[in-house]
Image 1 (cartoon, one colour):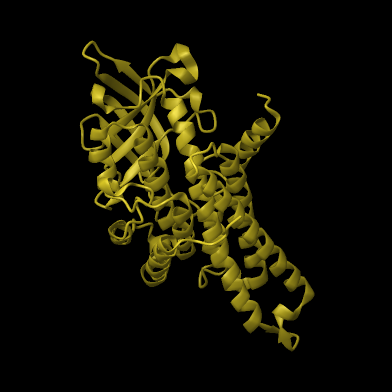
Image 2 (cartoon, helix red, strand yellow):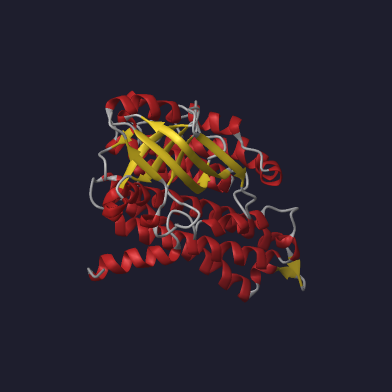
Amino acid sequence: MDFSFTEEQLMLQDVARRIAQEKIAPSAEHHDRTGEFPLDNIRLLGENGLMGIEVPAEYGGAGMDPIAYVLAMVEVAAGDGAHSTIMSVNNSLFCNGILTHGSEAQKQKYVRAIAEGEAIGAFALTEPQSGSDATAMRCRAVKQADGSFVINGKKSWITSGPVAKYIVLFAMTDPDQGARGITAFMIDTDKPGFHRGKTEPKLGIRASATCEIEFQDYQAAAEDVLGKEGEGFKIAMGVLDAGRIGIASQAIGIARAAYEATLEYVRDRKAFGAAIGTFQMTQAKIADMKCKLDAALLLTLRAAWVKGQGKRFSNEAAIAKLTASEAAMWITHQAVQIHGGMGYSKEMPLERYFRDAKITEIYEGTSEIQRLVIARNETGLR
C-alpha cells in the first residue's frame, strides 16, 4: 500500500492550510460568537478551487480526487469547523449528486456557480418529523399534465439554507411506492413559492447558517428533476456516502486542532514543579488521542481511495465517519479536561472545538445509523 501523496494533492493541501491559518482561524471566534456567515472566506475558498475539489475543470472545479478532498477538508476544519461544514455541503452533498446524476445543462448551470464560489448550494432531505427515517417525508411534488411539478412541504436543519442560491431537494412524488416514490429536484431559491424560516441557534458550527425551508405551490419544471423520477432515495443515499467522507475529514480537522493545542499546553503548563506533560495520566491521554486521531485519518483516506477507484465505498465511508466523529468527540473532551478551567473558558478555542465536534456524530447519519449500515453490510441481513 502506497501512503505517499501526489504533488498536486500536496499543493491543494498547502493552499487549504494557508487560507485556514491566515484567514479562517483568525476570524473563527468572531463568526462563532456572532453567527455571521463567513461569505468573504467562502468566496476565497471558491476562488482557490476548494468549493468544487472533485468537480472537473469544465464545470469550474479543481478536477482533483477524493484524497485531495480529504486533505483539504482536514486543513479547513482545523481552522474552523463551521467553514468546513459549508465546504463539505458544497463539495459532497450538492456538487457530487449533480455530477453523478445531472444533465449537461444542470451541471453547467448549478455546479459551475457553486464550484467557483459565486453561489452557495444546499441539500434538503431532513424534515421536522423525519431525520434518520427519510422515507417518512411529507414534502410532496405533484406532477402536472405538462410534466412539471407543484411542490409543497417543509424541510428542516438545512445547512446553508439561509444563504443558498440553489438546493437539491428530495420530495415524495408517489407516496404508495415508499422509497421508490421519492424524486430529486433542483431548486432555485429566487423563484416564487420558496420561503426560508428562522436561522437556528446552534450549539456549535454557529457560522454555518442553518434553517427550515418551506415550499408553497413551488413550480418545478420537468427539466428540474435530477436523475429520473422515483430515483431520489437512491441518489440521496449515494450522496450521503460521499458526504460521510467529508464529515469524517471535518471531525479529523477539529480533533487535530484540539490535539495540537493540547500538546503545546502540556509542554508549557507547570504543576508541582514540572510540566504537566511529564505526568503519566496526561501522557496516557496524549497517547490515546494520537492513536484515535491517526486511526481516523487512515480509515478516512481508505474510504476516499476506494471511492477514487470507482468501487462501492458505503461501508468504508460509514466506518470512517463513525470512527472519526467519535474520536473527535473523545479527543476534544480530553483536551478540555487537560486544559482544566482554561479549557472551559471562551478565552481559548478548546470549548469551541468541543462544541463543534458534537455535530459530527449527528449529521449525515448519526453514529447509530453508521453502526446499522456497517452491521447490515457485514451480515447481509436487513
